[in-house]
Image (cartoon, rainbow, N blue to C red; front, side, top):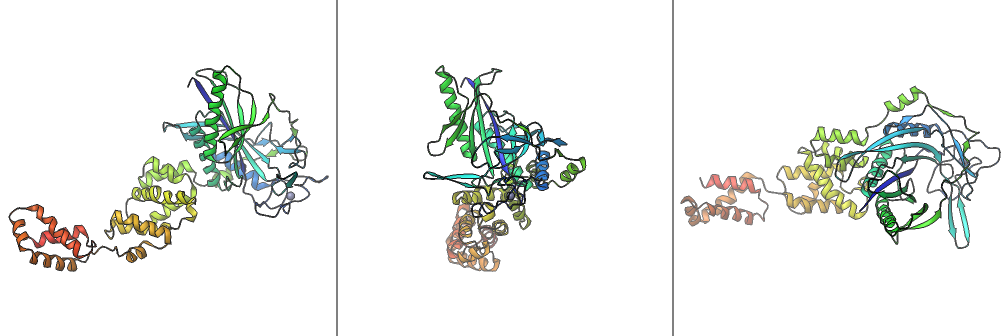
Length: 475
Ligand SMILES: [Zn+2]
């Protein structure tokens, strides 16, 4: 390809505060339509907004966690436009001075190297209501109106679809680690607008960009970027110009379609919100939030590598979700072997079954403790690694512990020395010809005796113990 790709992302993260940004209405996705609404969030005349302190604390949290500068004074602005799901006729947002600026996240680029992606700004704003269309009628539900959002605007530092999705996954995991966003993409807790442009290789001048609105899965973000890059390329190769447009990604056709063609800059007639004082954040408030930040993904990756001796790749996979990291650590608590073995079982077996079932680690039918039990059974020689896979499958299907399944399947290895010695002695007594052969130097005949003990015990005799005993008996 003769072009450089330039990608920037804008994320809208719904904050998981109990109440809305400017009123005390409860935030609920499941409540009956228009039951979580008051005078403020339905924009009745004469009402005034009041700050939600929790939302401000959450904004500071994200600012600090993304290495951003917290602005000690920031201002709220009105963004004016008309839409039926916006009863005030304007959105309260931050235009001139956002709450945080100039941050960055570290991601892995396509070659596996660490790459810094800049975060231009993090601004506080509010969500709109929701409209739905029923035949000729349009319906408005204001339950979501006034839900606090953080808009996180990246610098255009990404150049492939993979990089864009690594950035998003990182940001998503930070929000969830911080406990400030549920991160449920299907419910719209975490929505992404994708800006894409291409320019001739090495050129300084940016190409015309298109913006794809509200893409709601990591996979779709990748698909929509790949599609847009190809589309821009075809347009430029055929001597035409890319139009500055706002697009939607159609999941069915895997293509983008035009929502509206933009003029250079939409005029939202921004002006400072007269009903809210400038937001002033003190050093002590910032310090307090800083002191209470939880361990974040990057720190956890480092700790997992150092404390458990697992490779960077494993640490990266296991910390992508807070719950997964917790699962790993809980499983290690009751496990006596190498952490790498546990990491393999989680990444290869458990995650595969969970992904196939489309379920999450929180709903894993195999508890951390059960998985530890299974791995301990392998390490102690109770079952073989091969048998363990069958046991695991049964554990996954039934939710039972490894010990219960091992008994049920009759897999328990016989490690009773006395019992194996008796069986082995019987076999040796009955096969004197082979004993002579062995004593004459035919060592291959040794396998015959082991095989006979296995046959006698339905394969349950502990193989290494059996060999040891036969060797001893044969002198
Ligand atoms: Zn309200």
